[in-house]
Image 1 (cartoon, rainbow, N blue to C red):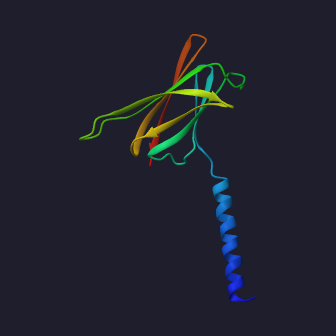
Image 2 (spheres, rainbow, N blue to C red):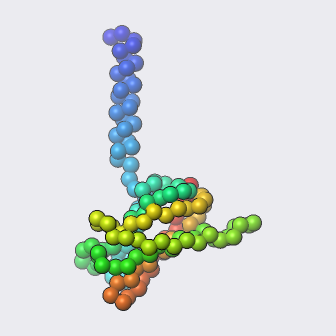
Image 3 (cartoon, rainbow, N blue to C red):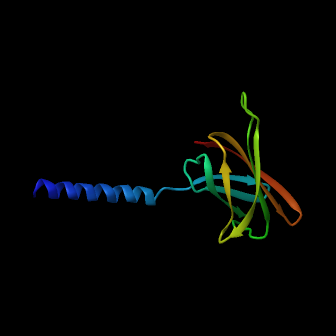
Length: 134
C-alpha cells in the first residue's frame, strides 16, 4: 500500500474509534432511596459542567415500578465562598416519556447541593445530592 492510502485508513479507523467512544458516553447518574421511593438523578453532561444541563429524574416505587403521578421540584444551590454570596435556584420538573425533566443552569463550577423534592399523594420526601460541577 502507498503511504497516502495507509494514512487514510489509519485516519478512518481513528475516527470510527472516536465516534464509538462518544456514542457510548453515559449520562451522569446518582441514586438515592428516600422512604419507599428510589430517586435516580441524571444529567446529560458527564461530568456536569457550568452552564445548561438537562436534568432527568426517574422515580420508582418499592416494587421498582415507575412513579408517574408526582409533583417534582429541584432546588440547587452553591454555598457561599469568600467574597461571594450563596447561589440558590429552583425549577419544577415536567413528566416527559419515562422521567421528570427540566433544564437547569449551574452558574459556575464547584460543589453544588441538589435536592429533589417529591410530593405524591400528600406525602413529601426529599433526596439530597452533592454534585461537583466542572
